[in-house]
Length: 379
Image 1 (tube, rainbow, N blue to C red):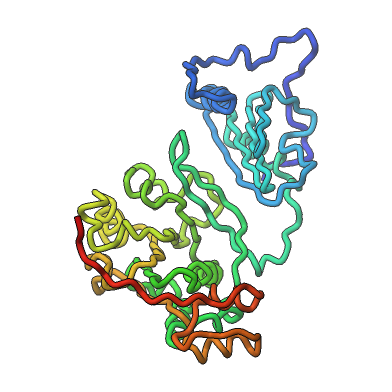
Image 2 (cartoon, helix red, strand yellow):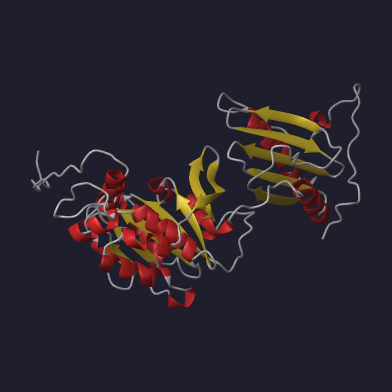
């Protein structure tokens, strides 16, 4: 482990000195789409790419202290960028270069390139030392990754997400649904049969809440990642490969399973998906049990408002799905028991969890509307 007490060698600056960044061996073309952060990227990665400092280390931080410098003591910032939601800076050392980014959600990323791997790790360790606040009640949160396609490719951010314990929310689901979710929450790696998890049902029935509870129940063996743009994920093979393989610089153990959560991606899996979504459906199926999925411990959890009968048969075929759970309304008696004496009229046909929460909190009475008849195709 690098010794934090041994001083790091720094580049000395004085008022007459030329900033060493001005002499870095790099060349690039900036256009109207470039921004100051791109300059920081080029300064750091040129040293790495040209082999001047060929060793790279990265660390993701949460709950970063406001006063944490995120750099070795005594070092001087060479370049700095401050924006409304984030800030970034570049530091030049003797044989190493550091870039740090921090965001208003108290997360941060530190990247280091150096002439040796030992030096890169040492600079990273010193810079991250005591930068984070003590954790709160870790039992109520799970570190979840969030994927999205940015200007320069696929990006993953890790943030703590509030996750309920399944026992605390079990009463939010109808009896048969709760029983199915009981079995799902108790699964372990050796129980996995099928790679696709499908939660379907009307809006407001608690599908997202169930997925958050599942992320907590499985947190000991499975890393949960939410994909914010699933339609882009399956349209870009490079993005799909990164999400399936995992992002570089992750702290999670390599032998953990990964669950990619895709919410409300109805257009990807409905009956006409093959003709309307291009290769999207094919790539989804390939990830779950095709060549791409072989050798990768990846699960795909999909929530959808579509009725099961309207989904593409390839998605629901036996052997592909780990579980198919229809999450519907609580029955009239279950809904009244859920309210536990709170005044309010519950329709005989039952109510969704969202409707019951609104009723409990004093919102207007539940609106009841007859389902519209399916008119079929029209011109």
